[in-house]
Image 1 (cartoon, protein in one colour):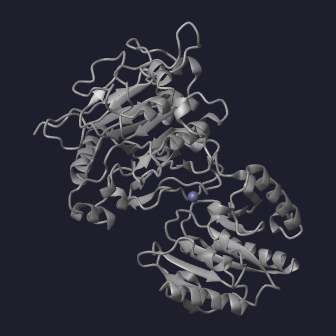
Image 2 (cartoon, rainbow, N blue to C red):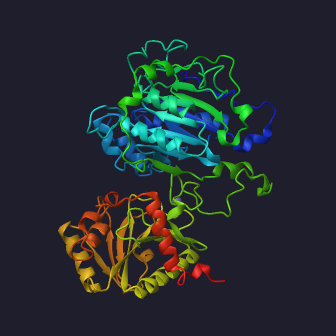
Image 3 (cartoon, rainbow, N blue to C red):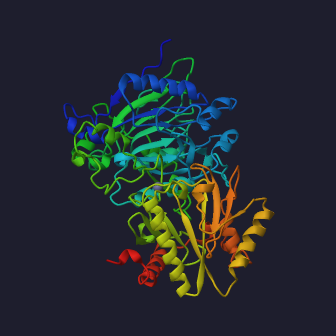
Length: 559
Ligand SMILES: [Zn+2]
């Protein structure tokens, strides 16, 4: 059977003839159109390609990842019977039927090697490849359905990117719908009339973000537009060009191209002259005129909060390591800023301290293996998190030396809060979270006794049919929970723990809700952290105060 042709198409901007020097920072990627549940077809194809051309760094899927097909095939991936042969990133639902697969709007691992990026945000891949993603289809009506984005989403995504210093553009933009008007001034888009179909909001997003590559799907056809300019000639300095590529659906009978291979050097590692080199077939920008005519600016309301936008970081260096494993030392590593080998996230993470965009202003103390940060939208001004510096999903996975420092932080925080007339309650939820977060919430001694807190947890758990097991003081969660098993536990100031093994569903806010309830802190309106958000300036002030108060107790400052 003849398969759709796939070949490495080096982009003009980054292809350097005979220059092997920059190879280490070149990412070799695959993009794919609607998978529609044909996981075996896709991954077998990827295996064949990898056998022939060597391994790729990642696979980006746009359009419908799930189809209306039965779940049997997906179950095999979900349960680990089958495994994707490449780190795969997918966009969310485009219809009501498939919303159920994407429970966590912030993105999550769907199966081993398959990660849902989230509703919208920025994902930084290895070497700093910047990928912006927007899931779903366009909706101009409020409330926006779970499978759609609104003008507000587009606005906040654009604003977030623009606010980063010296914004020049992004490496890759992933959307499911085509941008409206993309065929203007370009080669023929075949049977798809781009003046009628597609999303004008995506045209506006592409205009604002200036991606070097923009991938889309949903139209069941392949269309590679000639590259277009992002600057106005004779009026603006030259900027990099954009390549728009729409991909067909996996395993389509017409054998239209659904997989696209390309190599790219992250723009932040390129020199400007190289980056802005214009391909010979470059065309006029298809959107500029039309986006202005449609006065999209007016249609887009001001954003209420940009924090809903996700920043994710993938510090996975697998590829870099593999390439330097030929006996050469790490001096030639393209990641000189990595201070030491830390466990790396398999996908996006924004709690790894090495992530360039981690909310550093919230960090209040940094140890050897762990750090302390104020909780975003905390229950109180001194609600803190103990976090491992490297990527560990749960307490169960920590090595002995990391555990030791966690314990040291716990003991120090207990002393610190005691000096302020408070006892501290600690909980961990290893469920729908990628990076271990130990929540530490101080409760004034005058509010209630430890037993009242314990009772509140037990009562409220019973009400929600959550089985809390009392486990003895000093017992180890490791002895109770297997690595990978989901759980929740709360640790009282006496060291007693209440443990729950999560089987299927667990209310994400449970720990907060109980602590915020009348029986304990009596601030029920604060049980949702989103209700507690404050400005960055206020957060900075709180962090400054905490650091100052905590300083006499902070063991990391001792010589
Ligand atoms: Zn992490």
